[in-house]
Image (cartoon, rainbow, N blue to C red; front, top):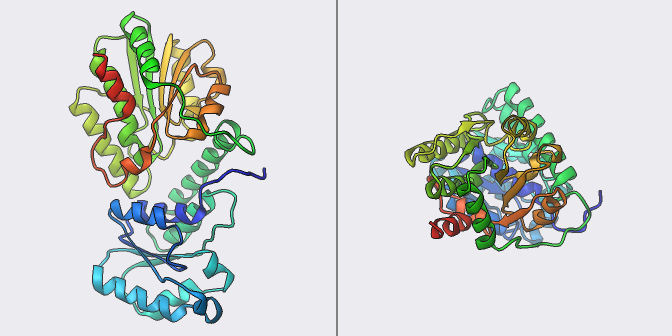
Length: 354
C-alpha cells in the first residue's frame, strides 16, 4: 500500500534497536538534524547519540575521515562498552562505506555498522538492518535473529490488517473522554461482572500501560477480574530488563498477573490472548498497549475497553467493535529513561473515582 500519512522511520527504528542491544554510543552518519527529536529522547534513555553533522561539502567529497574522527572521539570521551554507526539517507546516496570507516578508525570498542536510510515504507527494515550485524558480531544468537525476524513480520501484519497502517490515511483522534470510559469500567467491575485485564504492550511503553491494570486492581480489589501481562523474560537485553522491573513493580503493589508472552511478542500474542478470553468468557475486557493484536473473532460479545498511545489507532479499534477507546497522549516520551512504573492518565482518573 502507498501510505499518504506519516509512518515510522527506519533510521529511528535502527537507533532504538541499538539501544535495546546495549549500545552506549550511537553515531548518526548524516546531517546534524537527522532524527533530531528521537536522538534527544534516546539520550534521556541513557544512550548517547552523536552525529557527524555532514554538510554540503561532505555531500560532494564524502565524510569517511569525519566519521573516523567522531568514532575515536566517542571512544576516548565516553569509554563505551558498545557502539553503533547508523547510516542516513545522505550516507546512502553518497555511497559511504560505514564498516570501512569503523575499521580505519582504529577503535577497540565493539562496534557495528548499520547500513540504513529512510527510504523504506516499513520501519522494521531498520530493526533488521541493526540485528544482522549484531548477530555477525556475536551480540545475539542466530536463533534470536530468526525469532526477531518472525516477531517483526507478525507485528507488521497486525498493523497492516487492524492497525494504523490498515488504510492509506487515518484521521487522528484523542478517543473517548477518560472519565466516561473509567466510570463505565468501574460500574462493571463493582457490579460483579466477570472481567479480564490484559497488558499486551510494546517494550518500554509497558511502564505506563501496566498502570492501567494496577489502577483497576487498586480501586476494585475484590472484582472478578483475571489479569494477564506480556512480561515473560525473553528478547534483547533491555527488553528482558524492562520486563523484570515492571513485573517486580506490579507484584510490590499487590498484583501478580498471569504471564502471557514477552514485551517484544505483542504482535504475535493476539491469538493466545483470544483463547484465554474464550476460556473465561468475560463480560468486559480491558486491553492495554496493543489491543488490535487480538483478532476480532475473540472479542465478539465482550464490552472492550482499549487503551492505546496512537491517535491513529482509534478509528481501527472502533472498526473492530471495541466499545471504549482511550488514548494515552505522549506516552512514549514519558516512558523513555524510566526504570519504574509511571502513572497513566486513565489510571489517575480511575483512582479519582475511588
